[in-house]
Length: 365
Image (tube, rainbow, N blue to C red):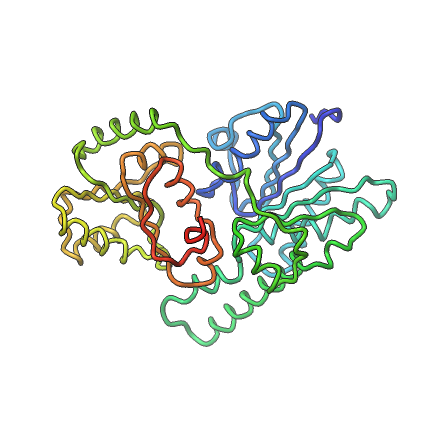
């Protein structure tokens, strides 16, 4: 039950509560807002591909009297048609709860919010103006294009992928372009993660320069040195890394654009130049076989490689065991405008970052 004397914030997401960055980039910032503003109440609306039991939901999102969670079904992406289905659920939600501000994470959530918020005004001209923030965390169309560049595909798959890419581009343009700010029923801002992404949205999607700003609330707060040292000793002891070892860490997945093979080659180079170098690889369990094959391919001494799958709640502890964080990326607009979550995590525990000058944020900070 909502308390209408509280200030009301709604957040709408499409990438799911089981997403690897949900806790650090969505849940934690929301809980921090609630702690900072004692009279704030938050409603999280998430469109999900699967159903969650109460027990599963509690595991991901701890109960809080000022945080309400609404899960809606998410259909496979089929352009604006699928988003209209999401809009059906969104319209029912906004009719039943008080609203003051909405944050939409990404262009799909942004499109649904902007397209259907006007329903509040159809029969109620006295409806107060709702502040809307669209969180632009990357370039959805370009990310899809980059993911599809690996391997050969048939002509009909190419046609489908071209349609999918163009559709995502059109949705992004519709969400970010300046004429959205002229709508009488909303006050809209766009929150980006880097100056490069801000510039791209202004130039490619005609966003209003004075309505685009850089996100600060989802930065990861640096861990104090005493805790880092404690975690470092604990994890090194647990995984049998010598206290004197120099540890190079990679945290992420085995996606080709994250340069996993180049990362393995870099670790080999460091290990050959210094016998005291160890490698720490933190990847999902499903990627372990591929990583083991890469290590064999490059004839790396696996006695000094630690390969682990780590729960997000323990990730910073494991990162604290390292000295260097490896962040190599393909040269592409997707990576140029990004502010990788891994970068924030490496920074939080004070790792020196090894990169290949493909991320503008790293070059400019």
